Length: 468
Image (tube, rainbow, N blue to C red; front, side):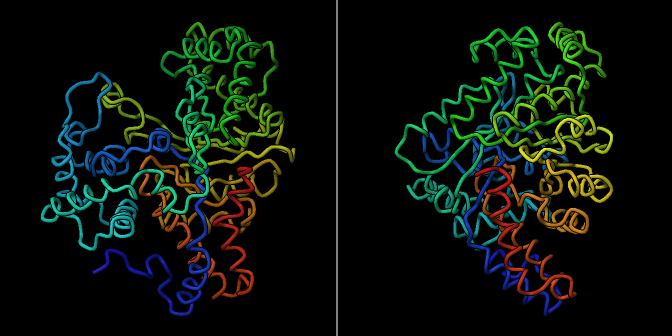
């Protein structure tokens, strides 16, 4: 019995369901364009087989292990590595059995759909993962992973990925991207510039990071002018490895456009580690505007991911480091916070700024009205906690009436879990088909327009927005 219902996520009403099915069939096999994510470029550079099912499905996926941890299961027991190199479970079969025994925790979540999609469509599994089936499914996946057709590059091609962007900091030497570039493989893997370690005074070792960035850029980054030039040099270097975008993960959407002498003084305080919390936020805000001006010069698309209290648990952060499932949404102001940036560049047509949010209440009140009038702005898709069927549907319902379809940028999967990529894109294509079908069935969209919109949302808009 298949794990997946063929009509999943489609409308319940018969006519709308038929329309959704027809629209979906027209887009389901389009290439995947993944413009923002966190897959490891070394997978494609080295192209070694994935070691085991636990390292493929459990250890890198914070969507999975955060849910189990919420029920009291230690991250160590799931093999999540510690910052200090301390002992964690190293037996992949034990990790897998723990994961399988707690599958019920994922019922109704997007992770369950993604996992079932990967089990059925990638590995040909037709039985539900549980404590009883854990060993047989582990053995089956392990057997598959030993075959050449399950190596990273082969899966990349099989998934129909046209291009995928990884995300690296200015301190990364991009050696894996160089290895990909030097290989005879024709898969397109590009990088994206994520400058957070070098623009956030609250980031661990900020001043040392800035100095190292300057060394990599070949400039003295300890002065304000040199610091900005170091970013320009690193951005240019990233472009040689295919980068078309930058990515900025800030706790707030605050932007600033202060005089350069004031910015220089604030930079000096940041380097000395003497910024107050407000001054650190102001510096991050200034750097968003500085990065926007750089984007006008070098053409990199700018992504802003604000409104997230990152690494909320100090205990987990100290023991396991960043990105361990403790990023929590916060209320976010966009109208006032973005005004300095928009006064500086919002009316320009030679820059694209893509806004994301974890604060759904801001969609119809702030984000859609802003993107519906400023030429520089586009709306990124539902992200992190809202990259679910319900979150995607709410996104379309809340922004379309004000921003339309063409001030959005399609879908991106934003994932570290490689095998979930086709599953996530499939969910987005089904949800968009369902939404468009409802518009057609209720007389709000002409039937002959819907297939074009579906194609645009799946493929054209993301390619154009990210200049891919």
